[in-house]
Image 1 (cartoon, rainbow, N blue to C red):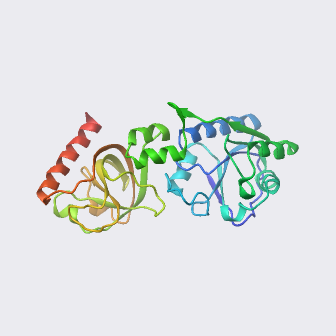
Image 2: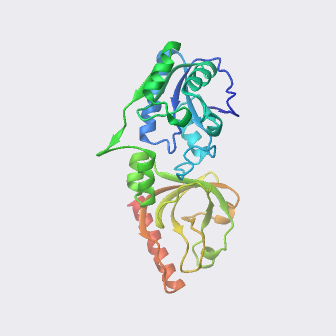
Image 3: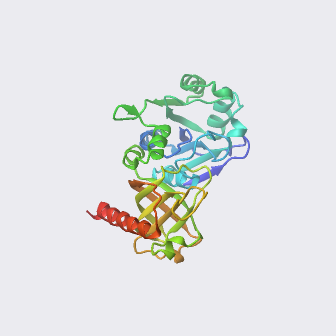
Length: 306
């Protein structure tokens, strides 16, 4: 998949006709998957390439919400959805464009859109004044079709990134997995910690995650992790380690079953969350903590192999 990072509003011209998915696609959840499937269908019908018009992480869009996915994970998911190209716009550079200029200069002239696909609540242009009716009206004179999709529902409600954030923040990993279409995942680099886990017999990989990443509710989880080209089952702790530290920041550390943490320092690790086992607890002694970690490990092994 080709990734085109755009500086300012100077989008490189596409020689190929494109069918564009419009949106930020945080999480690339089940609702997004339906939209991307429609993009592939329209691209095949029109002889165009399936592409995405999105925004760079940290460019000013939705900065008040923690991210369900890192930018690298978002791009990987879009690639897995068979998108041929992703444009990453600088939101700060385009947010004050008029609706007319955004449609004509960016979507039609630069990205060479044959069609665009977006959700029913898509907004664009200065102050978010443009909606799907505006998009349809402005693209029609150029012979560009706007395909507007209704919400994808699960149970009684629509699937959205905000609904998934609520599930993750509550530690409801089963619901998050249903809405995402895959487990909620944190990625980062294994960093050196204080080796407290190693000293008590349960070595952990400390995960360095981006500051804007969403962390699950504090507690212990059954997880699967991919690191160093291998996959491990394990348990992850999200919290402040109240038994052994005071005033520590919230972090994520993973105890890998059969993994050697020392071999992973400085390497990327991807942790997929499957089940919340218990909340964060403060124990009266290290021995009590160790006994509980052993029970957590047994419960996670039963979950994956039971």
